[in-house]
Length: 319
Length: 280
Image 1 (cartoon, each protein chain N blue to C red):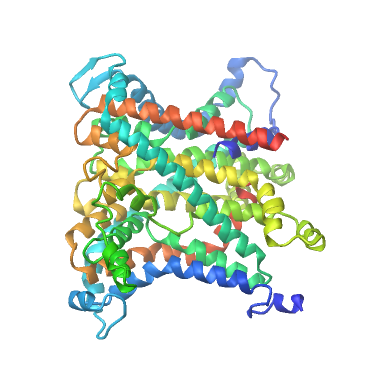
Image 2 (cartoon, rainbow over the protein chains, first blue to last red):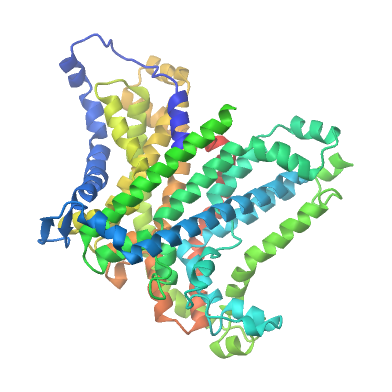
């Protein structure tokens, strides 16, 4: 969201309406704006209580041992040191990096592929219907995706194993989620090949804004499908692709419902990710201090990723 | 030739390879869903005997037994998500309007207090927020969900509403002022009706976000009677673990509410998102 935000801010028009003169003394201006402050009272109070307070509480309590209740004492940076030597956390980070890497590629290539096919259609009506068809899976509640994929990977009556039996590859059937060697791969393919709706629509929107004339003149110059893809479509939608990648990255780093529902980090902790470890530290082991520290690390990592991404994409558009 | 094909539903020659690729893609996408629907009409014996194909007789009883359980969760979710959407629509419109149309001391600071929160991820605040909500005595009440969902949704919604109100031409407002309308009248009779597309977008985003939220209900709601759909489905799937027909009938039923919403709003949703609402 970052990039959109800054762009919008930079281009938003100056405030047009100044109903009264602004030259009056400060306290008078504050007094005159009393109804405006009143109108903002509810949202500001809600954000202070439910957003700002927990955010600072997380920063503060990451320095404490805290069970969420009375046990509360200062330990300094001990939680952060503990993270360095925590084997579970190390596995979690490695899992997350691989998972995010794979997901970013999958969740960019698939939507781009589908969108490219759709804009290549001459028939307007068909391209409209394909859009609807590929957006359709979003009516299925997210959790159902996971439950259905749990069924797909089910070792006894799962779709995947049954399918392998059916085509005569019975010896490859597997307890996909129960084997530490396959579990992360199995999780990485969950929802395949469903398109991530937001990313799909962003990329599609980008491809649709390429003017018809550009494609026509490319066709006249004898550019085929592949040349057009690599020399026109991909470069011209670079911004949308970057945005889609950032979004995937941010979603995947902080969402852990997939892991919670499918494996709960198991077997052992072979499919652990940091966010899930945060959840377990807080709600299973009542280590709210340690959980907060993990949260702070994730927050910093996500912030850094966004900034790097914005820098890179700004650099790419500058040349 | 090409122009002739444009309006017909038949595949143009040139379209054929793309159509074939899309059809293949579509089949892989919908295959698991189709299997879920097929299985939802089977008894367990039928399922174990014949995994792939539909089989008579259809066990529609699966649906009535699943419906009895799923219904309560859907009901709860409609209540929770519905109240969240209404509250966000009202609060974000007012706040967005104030930010867009007025100049007053501390405006920038307050607005920054809103938008910097976009950078604060939910995982950071999860644990301390739970303690807060628990200490406020909200655990296991609808307010635990609604209060947090509203405040979380306000961040993006207020910003969207603000940019929308800023984009409306000044003349519209001037006309109303000239006619002697008070500020609140301008807001209710001019601005809100004009902002309907953006309010719809905000409502839709909120709906999807809250409908699918699993983690927050999981930590704050403990009563089966009060669970929203996402959490209820998890409960349901462990209660009916080996009763495949009923289980999948429940899955199908739980997809229907959003299906109905999208049948109505799909067109607007797609055009809203592809025609520049999210232009990077």
